[in-house]
Length: 84
Image 1 (cartoon, rainbow, N blue to C red):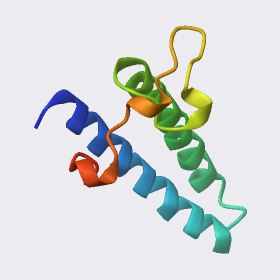
Image 2: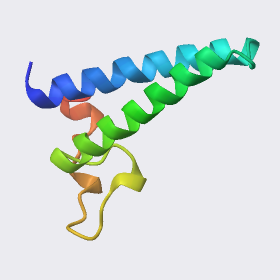
Image 3: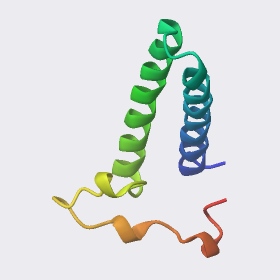
Image 4: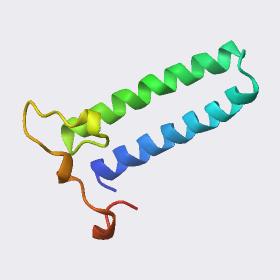
């Protein structure tokens, strides 16, 4: 597995943790420990997606840094086989 694929897998793992924490917080909104975990993993995912976007291509439109060059269309499309 290459660096790009490993980074995408790591981002996906952290995103899964965030979804799980969001579901937990929906039923336990005053659990301060869970909120701290959510904030920690949210910051981690933001940092990881920024690093990935700078190194390869933006994962979201807000990370398409137009000051350098427009790379929003540089990501492989799902039917090109790299998205799964």
